[in-house]
Image (tube, rainbow, N blue to C red):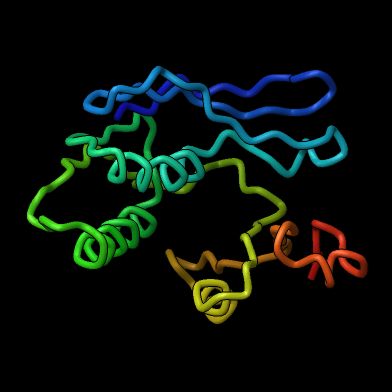
Amino acid sequence: MKVYNFKTRDAGGRKRVSAEVVWETADRPTEEIFYEVDQEFADDISCNPDAFFISTLIPAMYYGERRYTIESEVCPALLQGAKDALRCLKLWYYKDPKIEMELEVPVRTGIEEKVSRNSACFFTGGIDSYATFSITGIPTRKNIPVILKTALLPTGWIRTIRKSLNTYCHF
């Protein structure tokens, strides 16, 4: 799988960030994947390759891609965490965990000049969500704390809370 051609554009009154995905092993068509928000949240979304990396890596493994490459640099801590998670998934779910997917992922060495005024996570209520909140405020790189200001709640399975909470829960 190759992830490339990162773009930011207006999509009918909404801000869209997107990338193209080419499948190399799996018999699947080239796809555009995207995230988009209403204009009122346009300042809170950026075309960050980390989001595209994490959203395409497991599908690449699931569909049997032998190589994964992304044209932009990703966070080194995210890459290491993804490698750790892939090892667990291979052991748990795949008959031959020796099959490897070659990762060609460049890593960022510096800090991006534009720092977002907001950081977000998906809060599903599981152990991963708890771990995300437990590390909030711990420096991940020199003097740069991780501070979450927004949690996105997937609302399809949590209808009882949906009436009292918005999709965006600000801390």
